[in-house]
Length: 306
Image (cartoon, rainbow, N blue to C red):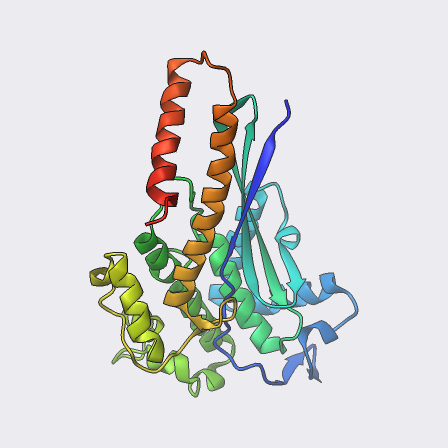
């Protein structure tokens, strides 16, 4: 049976909590400078060394095991889903398939790949790898075609949810402490989320991600126009701590931009699917008519100009 595949690419590039500066790391008794890609000419061997170094951290060892297990459930090995890239990000593609003859019957598939920037020093590469593997392992797949897909939950999930930016940041800080203890004590972002006992605080990390600086007024107006401003009490005009390298703005704004981009693609794809339904036979089962009416209501509600 011939299927129409509608691809929906969704990603938010994550920013490492470390500056991109040259570092020195001891590898097999030698002092190595430069990027993690300078270790050997083999990407496979360089990744193998990164995983070995990351596994020296209790947090990293657990993360690698869980990432390996998740990859195996997708029919892959960990090297299959971790690649070298121009930037560090976790790229998730949702594929929606249906036959033009039966457009009411839809199959969804989700695929994820982690990319690690080729330009990072060894310690920054370890932190970025821990960050992106957190997204890969814990981030729950979402279905933007679902009736429950909405902007408020999308922003909160991107930042505060399982596998979101806060959890990935906390993972970086734990790995930083476990592998680079002396450096961790002088790392400003991780210091900012310590509680009185010196433990890393999830609550304080959430607060940092909602500091949007000069974007505050304009962003709040956008939230108010969507009647969701009251759901973001942590939003503050304080100094920005994190910028999304995908959009060049603080993460709450980036998540909103991402939502609008995803919804635009959803509407384009639903419009095509409605066209297939309308071109179908005049006499159709009652269940198909209900499905068509449901899609039409959903499309009109989400995609019609406000």
